[in-house]
Length: 166
Image (cartoon, rainbow, N blue to C red):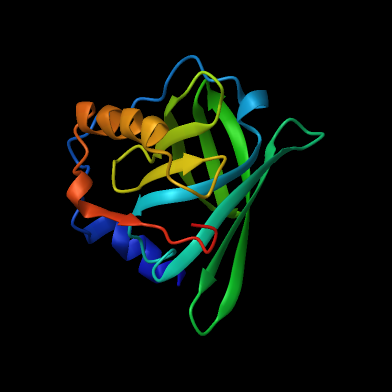
């Protein structure tokens, strides 16, 4: 699994390779904490076949962030992955799932009420549309899509995450 993820980052078709992945500079991490449902994403080996995906972000006493990714994979049940995030700059975390492997996590946009967010890695190979609700609300989702397009992401490559709550 680790090798697949590394190979993916090195050799994949990257639909967002020319995208602007600079993090937003006005993100309040304390408001970002909590549960986020994945509404859409670029497919990656570590999420392949996953549906009902959500992530929990919790503050730790040492100032870092505890991250739990959870998703349902057909025939395999619910899978979870634990990670630790370290704030690098406003809107930017370094996320480590393994002690020696970390990745950039850039919050590209968040609405004023912290109900919807657009997130990517630094290289643009990962893109996530996140919401506090598992349902797509067009009035909230469309501005995030426009922001992704403005930044140069290819939205035709999106996988829309299924949630049983829809």
